[in-house]
Length: 198
Image (cartoon, rainbow, N blue to C red):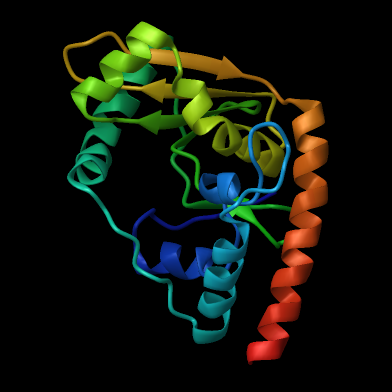
C-alpha cells in the first residue's frame, strides 16, 4: 500500500481518485454476498469518462452528507478519547498494484483503521436499535481492509449526545477472494473502455 499525503476533499485528493475504483464505491462492483452489483456498468462508464477527461464528476451531497463531513472531526476526537489512541489522518491509500484505493477516516497503529459515519439522528438511532450499521458499509469496510492489508477496521456511527455505534471487523477471506477476482475483471474492463474512447 502507498499512502498519498493530501488532505481529503481537496483538488489534489479528487485528482488522485479520478477514474479509479475506491472502497467507498465497491458496493457498485460487488454485493455483500460476493455477486456482481447491478450498478457495475454505470460505475464502470463513469470511471472511464473521468479517466479520459480528467474531470471527477460531481456527486450529489445531501444535507446529511454535508453535516457528516462537518461532524467527522468531532467523531474522530471522540474515538481517540474513547480508545486512548492516535488516529493518523491520511489522504488516499493506493493498492500495491496502483489500480484502486481507499480514503480512510483514520489509520490506527500498524494494524487498524476507522471509518466514521455521522448520519442524521433517525439513522443513528436505527443503528442503535437494529444494529445494521455494518450491513450498510460492509463492502467499504472490507474493501479498506483489502486495500490496506490491515488486521481490523472499526466502523463508527456518531451523533452528538447519543451513544456511538462501533463495530470492529476483520478480513473476510471469502469476500476478499471474490473482491480480488471482481476488481481484476473490473480494472481490465475499465482499461479496455478507456482505450476505446480515448
